[in-house]
Length: 88
Ligand SMILES: [Zn+2]
Image (cartoon, rainbow, N blue to C red; front, side):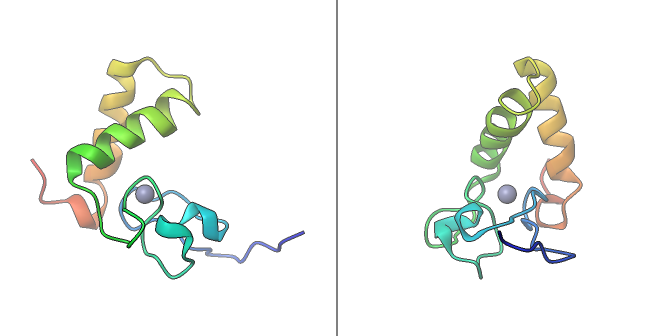
């Protein structure tokens, strides 16, 4: 059993907690972004890609939301993150 560190890493793009290496981009624990926000080299995807991944992977699959609401939630959540605050 793996202990969870308080203040464990969170994705700098979408805020998702990254509990283990496989949640990080490229499976690397030092990556700042999760696997839905960056490629295997840790390079952040474009906003639209991150938005689509978050819509589908988080709000539709995990929360069971229909697409229109999921898109709106994903957009608001992303725009609250420093990385994306200049997105229109
Ligand atoms: Zn992320």
